[in-house]
Length: 407
Ligand code: GDP
Ligand code: MG
Image (cartoon, rainbow, N blue to C red; front, side, top):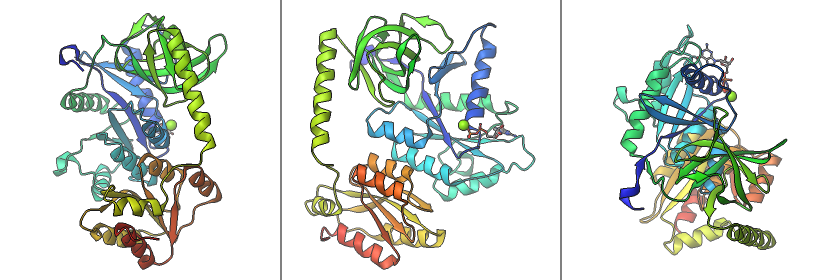
């Protein structure tokens, strides 16, 4: 990209965290501060994301997708998020989905800010949250770590300004830029069929400017943009980088996570859509191509794989720590184990989504078994789940894998 064409763009934020820790409330509170800023009477259109302004700078918030959807978007190469806010309730502390959300965020390489929510509660204990998070590698900046923690209350509005300012500071460091003068690229965050409109895609512009009349393709769907609706319900003729909007004009409902691109003519988008449909049909005929453990060990033996991503699930914290400790020590000269997620409890669909997003990853279960639904999904995705009841068996398998000797 030509440096001269690049301009600063607003950061795109996703809020994740454990259920009931206040993600929706926080999004609503931030949005309300915006509605209050606007003249009365503005209706808020649901476009899957919205923008607020702080100190003359815009920030885009995506409706919280859940960390599975977040990673699924990433595995399709359609990452829209620049910064993740991890919400932790001050009275409840770190919970399983908090850890999952952090693992998904780190695996995506996206910076995170912690919002300690529900500070208005008598039982709020922010130091406990800091201590718990420091144990899993998220150390607060005021404790000497590298992560910003902001105490907030979605109920009273306390700390919301701080949170927005912290986001803007982080965004400044990241120097987020885009070129408004090129053809648009966008990512679909939600989609639906709407009465009177037909297929509607809620998108966030990643680069360029999208105009009414543009010929677009989104996955296998295509069309000419008929209308662009903004989050305040108004219509726009064109929108630039990081702007969220609902677009009308596609022939079918696209998938969330699909990427939108603009092409010169309607013939081009139609032909590309047909090619993609053809490709999918061909792929469906061939078998799943994910690597089995044997393939993995071959890749390692050939020196093509330098780090083995693993997800470990165990029945109790004690065994988890023991396995982790041993795995971290395990390495041959070239390959090391990279633990992308660990947790106490059974193998979940969220684990599979995470495994699927990293190439050549392995899911290791200790004294836990996947449910039928999880097994089925693993099979569909071509992910191998290995379960063990003896730690040495688990370590032996991984050792053999690293040695490229596994059979
Ligand atoms: P989500 O599941 O993470 O989206 O959480 P919600 O936003 O739905 O909130 C879960 C519950 O916590 C609801 O009953 C909220 O009213 C409550 N809640 C959310 N934020 C706060 C807060 O700052 N203070 C208090 N006291 N309660 C909150
Ligand atoms: Mg919610």
